[in-house]
Length: 141
Image 1 (spheres, rainbow, N blue to C red):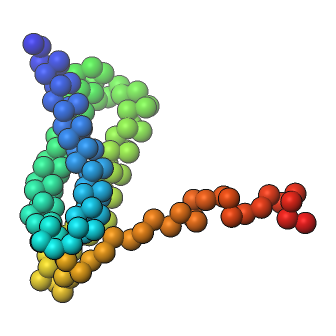
Image 2 (cartoon, one colour; image 1 turned 45 degrees about the horizontal axis):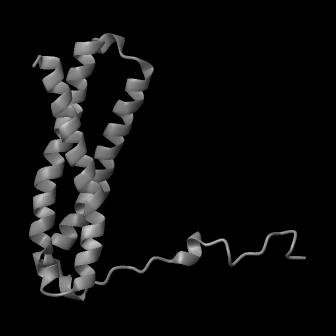
């Protein structure tokens, strides 16, 4: 196996873990909160485990992506689309660092006055997404 193929495999594997763990976390937290105690008591450890998995995979995705770009194009001759991909990757990391991680840490730290068993998931407000409640303008007259 060549170095380039190995780098591609590592890149895809890390990106899959990073996105998969991040996307599934919200549903896991909602389901756990809906179950209540004693399930919610295990949530801090699961969030901590998720962070220990997702953050390094995100960093490795960025680094292996830069390594692939260097191997294939050279960093001085990157196609414009790769600058966009780099921007989206950095934006995803910024959102994770500035918005998501503080929220996870707040849930994971019950000493801040949050009783995990007392938290309830928010119900989905179907009316926001439903258009059946509104009449078309032509019929509203």
